[in-house]
Amino acid sequence: MEQPKRLLIKLSGEMLMGNSGFGINVEAMSKLAEEVVTVHNEGYEIGLVIGSGNIIRGVEGAAQGLDRTSADHMGMLGTVMNSIALQNILEQQGVRTRVMSAINMEAVAEPYIRRRAIRHLKKNRIVIFAAGTGNPFFTTDTAGALRGVEIDADLLIKATRVDGIYDKDPLKNTDAKHYEHITYTDVLSKNLHVMDAAAISLCRDSDLPIIVCSATEKGNLLKAIKGEVKHTKVSS
Image 1 (tube, rainbow, N blue to C red):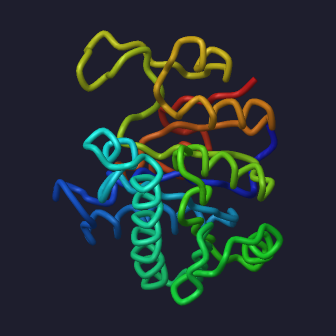
Image 2: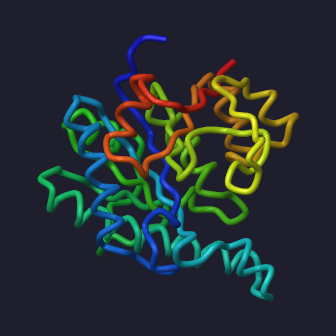
């Protein structure tokens, strides 16, 4: 594959809370923003999708008795809060950004329009895609895959606390096997919970390669893109 130029980076909401256990930890968010800015300064065009696990997950809300559609809408609003916070931190670090929301709320974010998003990217702005897909029953992983395909990204990066995909949880199993490369089909057939099935299937159908890497070490995100540190690539 040629060197990618346009990236869609998917960040989990849990990465924004640091050691706080809930909500937004500004120090943790600042470190994550530094990683994104380092990649941006290398000339990459960047779209971002952020989860809301630090605030609320629709599935968990539904499990506790909330209507699933209502819980998912709450999760989407959580991603908007995270997006506005990250926008503020990124702009403090000297990067121009735009937040585009799948749910119209023009007082705080632009409505998502594909052609406008691509124009922002070409103008060297980081575009933060908020509110998931705008529909319940779809995760932010699926939103990341969808936006990645829509903006013609060369690569989807799932930035986590783990350095790739394993056959079982490496934090609980010392004998967990790391995959350097795995196909979309194998991720689905082995039921590896790195991203949901809809996201993997969409990337497979659109031939959008995925890199799963850790973003907790300084400089790791850029090194993973360049293949200089341990990670997992998912492709055909």
